Image (tube, rainbow, N blue to C red; front, side):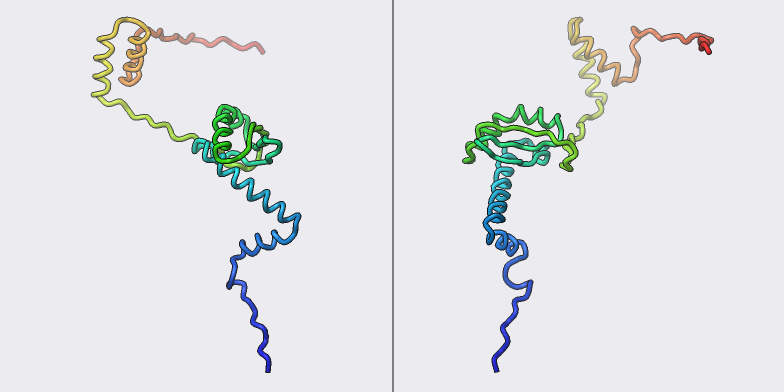
Length: 179
């Protein structure tokens, strides 16, 4: 009696994602798509290495053609900031081995890219020691814009209103509107 051929279970052998990638490699067209996707992922990681942390998730690679890298961004504000960093990113990409001479940006609103979140403002309340130091500074300064700015800061943090601001008076009877 001949034993039936053993069946491979889905859990043995290669993982599902490795199997899928292997399947894509069998067809020439899907192999080309796979190679392009892998190239875009490598380019994206190289671009991310040259960007500040708050900008790393707000773009996607569109294409690389004739030494021009085209990126898709979600807002004009990000595009403006990226244009300032483009020479640095281009140099970083060239150092990493990519043959890139220029970076172009396409703004596409509503991409579903994560919003860039500003870090929370770090400010602390001035204590009495701080206020005393500013008071000493104000008394040591000559009259001028700096002395005025320090005085304004002290008034703000001490909760007193300056005497130089006139109090507006309200008319006793508001003017009637024409009907």
